[in-house]
Image 1: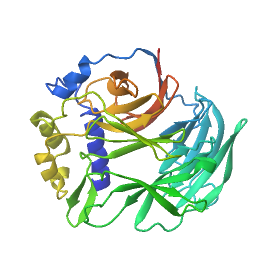
Image 2: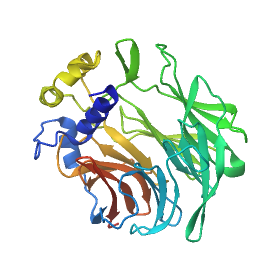
Image 3: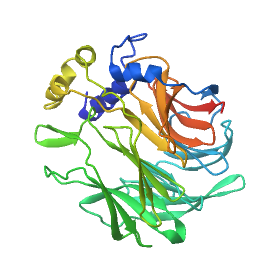
Image 4: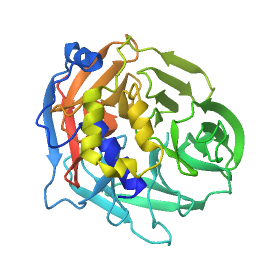
Length: 368
C-alpha cells in the first residue's frame, strides 16, 4: 500500500470508522457531547445512483446561484452541469492537455459574478466557464505564473473588486513548511499583496520526507460571496475574511470537549491497517503517541452557517455539525455514512458518499 493510499484510507477510517463495525459504543466525551445537541429535522436524503446519470465517479460538487450543480467526474475529468435532480444540462472538459481539458481538477470555485473556475495544478492552469441557458460555456484557459516555492491551492475572483489565491509554501523542513497564505492577485494572476497567513497544517516525517499527517490538524476554507470562511480542525471556531476590505470576524463556537484518541480507537487503527502502518516511518510513532484527534474533515459555509463533517467513530448515520454564525449555537444533522460535504444552497446540502469505492452524489434537504 503506497503512502498516499494509506493516508487516504486512514482519513476515511477517521471520518467514518472501520466499516466492519455495525456501530461502536463510545465513552468519548466529545462523541457524547454531540449526542446531547439538538438535531435538525431532515425532510429528505437523496442518493443519486441512477444508471442514467451522466457521471459515475463524482469527486466534488458545487452549486450555482440558481441551485444547479457542477459535478467533477473523476474517471475522465469532465465537468457535468446538472439540475438539482441530476438531469444533465451540459458537459465540458475531459482528460487531456488541450483547451478545456484536464489532467486533474484540484479546486472548483464560483466567482462573485457566477463565473466557474477549475484549477489544474499539474497543468498549472486555470479554466473558466460561464453559465448560459442550457449550456456551460468554456471562456478559456489561463496558464499560472511560476509561483515557486509557492503552489496555488485555491482561486477566487471578485470581478473588479479583486482576485485572490490561497498558496501553500513547500520548503523541506522549515517551521513554515506547508503554511498557507492568502494573496491578492493582479489581472495577470501575479502576487500583488499578502492578505493573511493561516496556521500551518500538521506534518510528519517519513524517512527523509515530510508529508501530510492524516490524523493531524489542517486548514479548511470556503469562498462565498466575496468572503473567505476559514477554520482549523483543532477547534470548531470560524474566521470570516471580507475580501474587498480585508476586515475579519472571528466566531467562537460553544466550548466542546477534546476529541481524545482513546486506546480503543488506537487499537482498531493498528488492527485494521496492520503492517502497513509500521512500514511507514514516522506514522506508527504518531499513532502511538497521539493524544487528541481533529474534530472534522470537511467544511463548507454560507453567510449564516458553517458546516463541519465530524469524525463519528463508525456510528451510523454520519454527523454534520451546523454552527450558527450569529448565536454560536451548534446543532447536528444526520448524514449518510462515508459522506463528504461540499456545498450548501438554501436548505439543501450537497456532497459525495463513498461506499466500497463507489461514489454517489447526495442531497440532504433540511425541513427548516
